[in-house]
Length: 123
Image 1 (cartoon, rainbow, N blue to C red):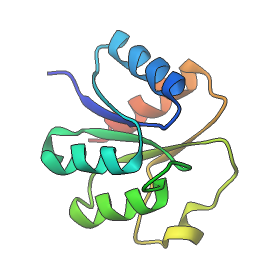
Image 2 (image 1 turned 90 degrees about the vertical axis):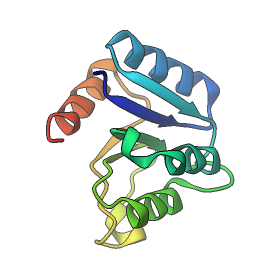
Image 3 (image 1 turned 135 degrees about the horizontal axis):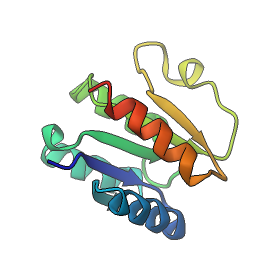
Image 4 (image 1 turned 120 degrees about the vertical axis):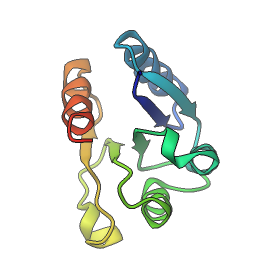
């Protein structure tokens, strides 16, 4: 069964490119335009989501608040951040909210796939 990845990014082009790349690799993908939509989709069935890719800078609910809410509900759910900025996640959200990876924008397809496969293989 294909692993299910929730892709959250407010930039439509980024969301579309990542989603299509993952579909082409055999993953099941659910896209979301912002943290609020992503959280609603996650909360519908957290067990069905194997991995979350989330932008940090998003409207409504940013990536940090999204991470806190996801980890509060489902501590084992893996989250990888997408960001164009250098950031120390632990300093901002605390040590109890673990992020499983950070992908810097602009990104290379191979880089995203390598990080995703590394996290997926630990599930």
